Amino acid sequence: MKYEEFKKILKENNLTVKEFANLSETSYNTCGTWSKGNKITPNWVRSWLKLYIENQRLKEIKKDEDCEKYKALAKALQDVISKEK
Image: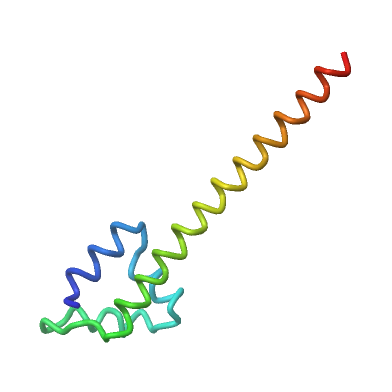
């Protein structure tokens, strides 16, 4: 992928090049060289980003599911308390 697409994907997912470099254990300078001379990113970058984005979405789904479980638990407790009165 071209560097412009790489930067666009990062921006869409609230990542900076520096954060990407840290997360992927890639030198920040290496990431910077991808922008020079119309170079393209290595093949692994696209798949890494896809997996990262999918992982972030799954974390959000998990949070939503956990939230729903806690809501259900809180409602059940409220029902028990109401019946005891």
